Image 1 (cartoon, rainbow, N blue to C red):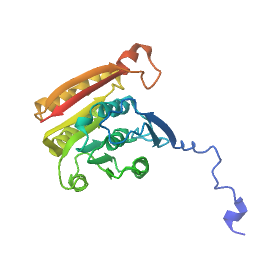
Image 2 (image 1 turned 90 degrees about the horizontal axis):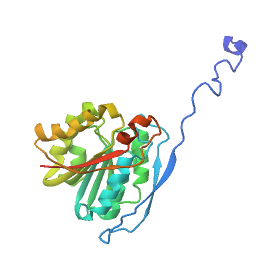
Image 3 (image 1 turned 30 degrees about the vertical axis):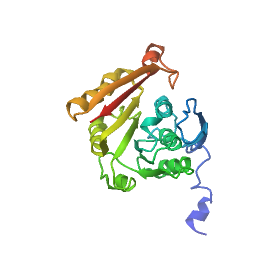
Length: 247
């Protein structure tokens, strides 16, 4: 009898509760409330599969993503027949709605985590005009340009990304380098950490002062915050800010 056998076959088996269970993937349905006559597809309901849990926060459908999708539906003139790039797409709702509205080509990107990218591809599988690429901000643009026939983009989406304060310069450089001269970027965010709102807003000062963008505030609206916590900050956390960046 070997030493392992003498110790019992179950010695190295982990108890069922040794590791926390992996959160299952889940589905949410987004309903397009502002479908315009110009929209190529009149499909109202968009079913999104979201990863069960992600350190990249791709497991939630954020207010900024829903606002961005509404904006795209309300402004088909910015999308129909145009090329679109989404950075940090998570569940990819804005890219999907852009594809439904009638974008010529959409390149939908997020960090090249295998589960996250597979999930985005699943969500976009029925849209031949939406292409999914793993992309790290600041890396070579070659795969993004190749996915867009070698051209820069008419419209770039940055939805709920400015909380990454250390990445502002990379996001802005990427946007500047990939936006057509007459193009437009849409930046939407909510202040998830109220005390750091000034750091969020610094993104737009940096865009103007260091990268030469024309910055236009579209609006600030209040929606129900994502999490029920800290009554003192509920108003700030309910905010959704939207801006345009133009060269």
